[in-house]
Length: 182
Image (tube, rainbow, N blue to C red; front, side, top):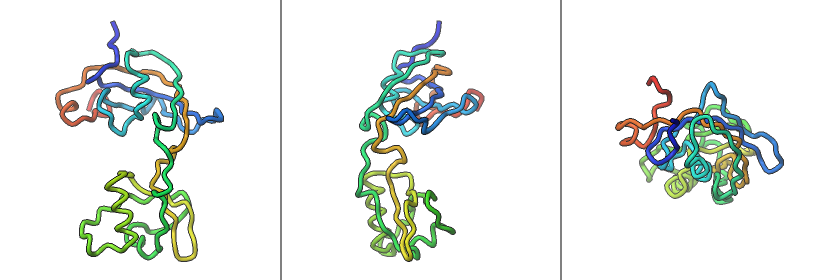
């Protein structure tokens, strides 16, 4: 009998994600499924999808439509900031629209510029993983700390690949190993 998805289960899934126009915006391949620990609310899976998976089993296929709040959350204008290029020079070699800058790890607050302090404050309250370059101007760059799918209602077409018991180490960490043979 197949295991049901419930708290403390290690689950792997594949899916296609569609925007409200029905366009596929992302696909997770069967060759690289997503693993997550059910009930742990970590960044491997959005809350609405995790809720929808509850009670399903290996082999199940279904679709679920999620609101902005159930998916990646609302788009927040305060996570968009204009930063002088010279302040970004230590973090990035080349600027291009769509480029990605990892979150700042600078610890000495006194040495940070005003823009860097603002970015650091955003990270502490909103925890963006990084910033997407949205626009390049003559002397500045527009950075966006929102998730690329923030502000979107989304539909997930899901297939459950596996449901297993999580190991003690996985439960303590709150994150799964990426494969069954790790």
